[in-house]
Image (cartoon, rainbow, N blue to C red; front, side, top):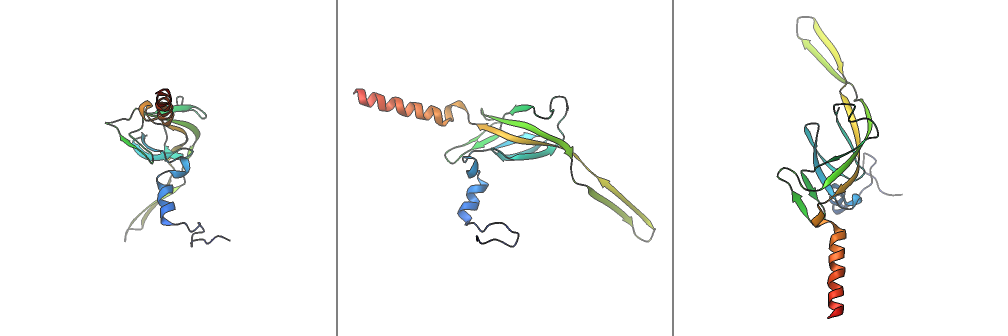
Length: 156
């Protein structure tokens, strides 16, 4: 049996928790995008819960959209855009639904006046399919340049 915390989660070293926050399970690549007026830090296979994206005809369930990230980072490089970085983030719309109920209760003391309302905001759930760095920072391009440099050494 693995040791657990009071909330039922596994006990992990601080170094491993820091790696998870940086996006290590997703290959260490993370991005910050702006969506529906808010910024989200995402990694591959994350689910984003955002305010309802309009028009609904464009953001139908199952559609895939590309966004330009504001920041892209990995274990080797961090790119900050002004305002955008050259890479792309692919998101798929999974669900359009309503959030949990928030109770709004107003009471005026000594006046026998009470109002209780419920509020459910409409949300769009999106799954992150892929995060790509700009062309000059892709690992595949660095592998091809490394192989070409070894070829030139072999010829010399």
